[in-house]
Image (cartoon, rainbow, N blue to C red; front, side, top):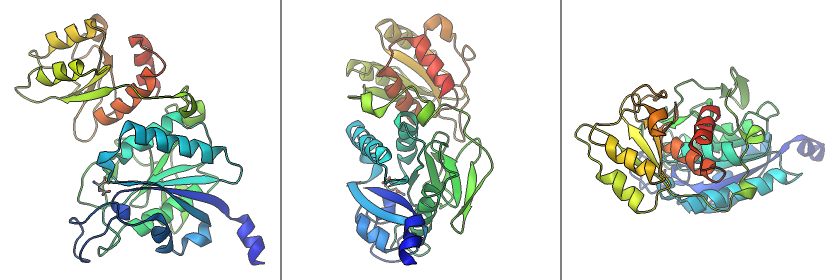
Length: 337
Ligand SMILES: NC(=O)CC[C@H](N)C(=O)O
């Protein structure tokens, strides 16, 4: 009987990369002071025995780092392993444990390049497992629950934090000290409660199976950098980034991706030299940059990132530039993904 029950369970692989969900502090009162990326995947799985009731779970330690240190090479390595597992007949779903600082970037990257309908869930925690009211156990339990469900298929890469199911495209870390840290300006897709998913909406943007990008054909990612805007900003950072070889610069602009009059001439010049200029917004709850509104993008041949925050715009620009150097194509891609 037990064997029959086991056979009915989905097979879920947990790829561990580090972060606070694998963190450890000196005492249970240390919710914010601790070391990330300390606990191995076997110990994480052993810490949530209830996982075995949801799925046949096995783990792989892909890396063990704090996510602020993730490189483009790390992204490619992770993306390739996810694709291999997704191609495997005996894998039904994939969970990635990840530091929360750049979790939204990795989730969006995978959402763009993984050609699969199988659920891919990225999950982290805001408190280490050693802390009182640690959130990692439940977040991981929820991630495995969603990864093993039929309903999560074909919905793109998802993030399960704080009982919510978020689209990996939309979600962003909004605060670094609450368990309610991950929000999307457009709301969560659903909830996961006691291991059951409740869905309310679907992603509208192209992803995974419907994406024109494929991790299997991406050899390397081009250099795309971000320059932050604020009162009294000058053009030093933009020029230095271009000088160091950036193929595109994400302008992390104020408001509607606005550009200071002190910076406009330099960005015009850089575009003429071949650097792509992509206007995004660092507005706190989410920007909404419109073409030709704050700046004449048609005239300057610039691109707008629309609702993508600067760090997500960097991910899409890198992926897009592996296929096209044409600014009109880039703009199409920024509207569609
Ligand atoms: N809550 C966290 O995961 C933050 C820990 C660390 N800075 C990281 O992103 O990996």
